[in-house]
Image (cartoon, rainbow, N blue to C red; front, side):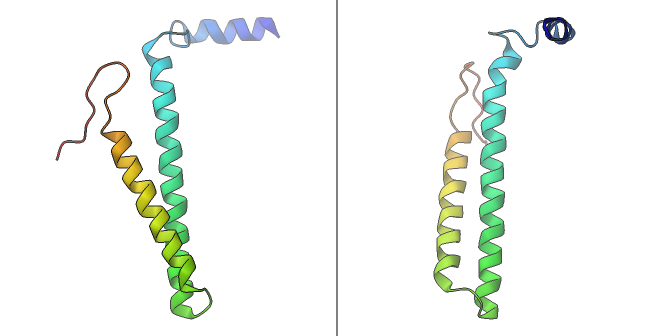
Length: 95
């Protein structure tokens, strides 16, 4: 087991070690993927509930809640994207 771990570590070289740039970017990348997944799920729920309201199957409250949560998650996602990174580089959205 230790032999496999050592082989995997050596194949990564210095990339997988603590304190490297790639290791520092991993947390930011994982958070970005999580926020994107949340927004996609909320968008699908909002569209699905809106179609349900039009068809008369779903109550309108579900659609309102879905759109409010989608707006809140999107606003937080944009706010998080405008924060400076831990490594000091400015990543604010320019528009």
